[in-house]
Image 1 (spheres, rainbow, N blue to C red):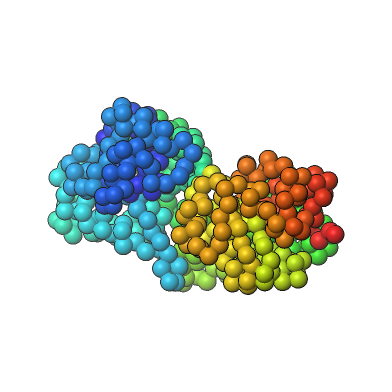
Image 2: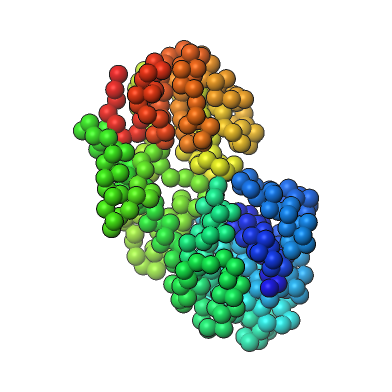
Length: 433
């Protein structure tokens, strides 16, 4: 099938190369000419494990191409996906400016039947808006259908999530476009739900908001555990053994971040508010998330009797492992707080040092964890990269000034850490000294 995808971020580019890998004829579109040229050369503009190899393979096979022209996409495609960004506005409402701009271009250029698929995360009713924009150019309704198809990719595992989706959600007002898309996605088998457009638009927000609630619940429980002497990892393991609840997203830590959960939770709050409902549960979820990182920083300051003039090694800068995404990273919040309070911070991340350096040139950046930890008063684990899980803890302790390890991701066994001569502070356990 001939498929065009407008937008080459995590969603658009990954979706494009996977459909091309499955031998669909894919044309991606982006208005950033520098990005277009990089992709033509097989250079992804984002870091995602395995993406560069698949991009080069599909470019070589001819099943994947890229252009800057939506007009060309309309002439070529049977299905056009809109996968552009919808960043939150000041009140949390997603900014659909880019979605509307694409709809205008499609409206100007439709000459035959096309299924227009909104894959961007958008407020309820955006499908109606896209439909109205296209019709405003005099396009007859029989020449197009607008479908909602929310994405559920996770950065760091986006290729696998696309190849093996856990669900396919299609929001339609007629069955015919659903049949076309079910045929397109036969190559990526998964359970499917065909519903109306507004329900589909809400599913993505509802899913991510519920995940955020689970994480914030675990983090709130970690505060109770620290006070009463329980172990949050064991408590949440026991909770997750309940088949009604399940173990996923019950790991306490520094809080959720990245490009999806913060944006989608705020978006769900704004969408609900716009329809007349004050989503107090989600507002509390956001507050807990903010407090979790601040509480971790306060514990570090208390143990060091203030951080002014202290040297801190910060391991991990991205919001999660296997991505180069720094958006709403808890690690950067820690970095900014430490610098603001006079600490000397040396950071290390396997892929994001250079990007972080542009944001915070006042920090130092090391080539490896041990260089970062040299003469440090404390080491902070902020991202659970596999490289950090395999650290030689004795070697780490030997290069440090004070033997203090703050683990915001619970990646070590306490006995191993203490056997290496390190004091160990973790989320969800009472301080042990």
